Length: 226
Image (cartoon, rainbow, N blue to C red; front, side):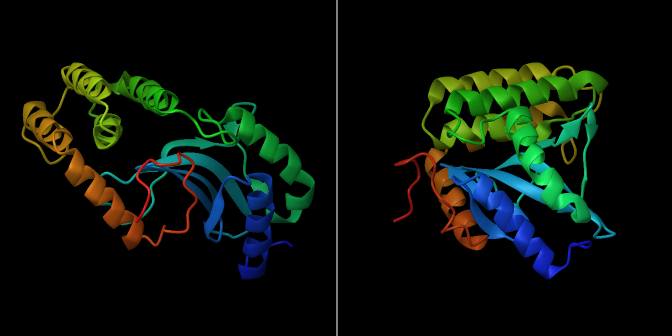
């Protein structure tokens, strides 16, 4: 293999799926499992040239409508601090070490399913890092941090998320995109978090819209489909 054509993409995807047996192939180069209202994934990002790919660990919250599956909390494979792309021609030689490196580097376990606390903790760490510029970075992640526990009926975690969002928004030097000021965005977030049934309904609708019904559920009993 030298280029990531259809046959190579299928073979490489099968290799990664065999290494992470708790995940299922959703599409070529994309593995997923579901944590209630959240997807946890491994994406193999194809370069424009088709000569190489970059493995990512990531999540995607289903609590809001979105046209695709996002690379939220994106954690690319790194070596010596730099994102490490894998040449298709070197896949067989590099694959084993790449799997172990991504497994070790991912902020969330790619083996045993992470807990709710670990998931929300990863969001908080990512958001805290994103605030260094003083701009409204991490806005979507702040929404996830609040709406995920709302969908799971965890009121204490919802309150913590809203408090954290208010604290972070107070340091923004400009309003968040689409809002006149942070207060309007925060008010909207509070209203959304107060509707857990609506959030769960959105998650189920997103599962069907994105054809995710066969993605394995790693948290048994949490937002199971009928």
